[in-house]
Amino acid sequence: MSKRKLTASISHVEATIEELRADRAFAAEYLKAALEELDDPEHRAVGLLALRDVAEAYGGLATIAQAAGITREALYRALSPTGNPTLKTLLAVLHAVGMRLSVTPAEPETAHA
Image (cartoon, rainbow, N blue to C red; front, side, top):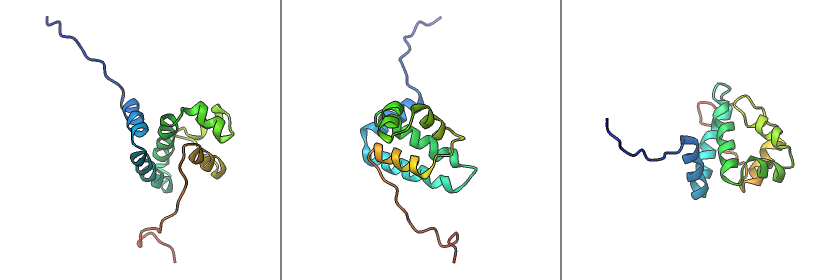
């Protein structure tokens, strides 16, 4: 039996958080792409979990919750796959991580007259 030494590895979530922490432009694009999923109820969890990853990368949930003026438990619930954060919570978390919400035109085929 071979006795090779195994190297330590990190989880996908930990690797993502490290990358988000290291590259703010990447974090903004990651969050922008994920938040577009909020439009689709079947994919809403993607946007919430991405915001949770960014919150972890930029201080951790406890620190971001305090900066946003909400309890840590409320933030965990709001950013869970079944969460339903208020606009006030969403804006407070974005502000706490140094980002803001913006609006872009919908694609022509999905735009309403």
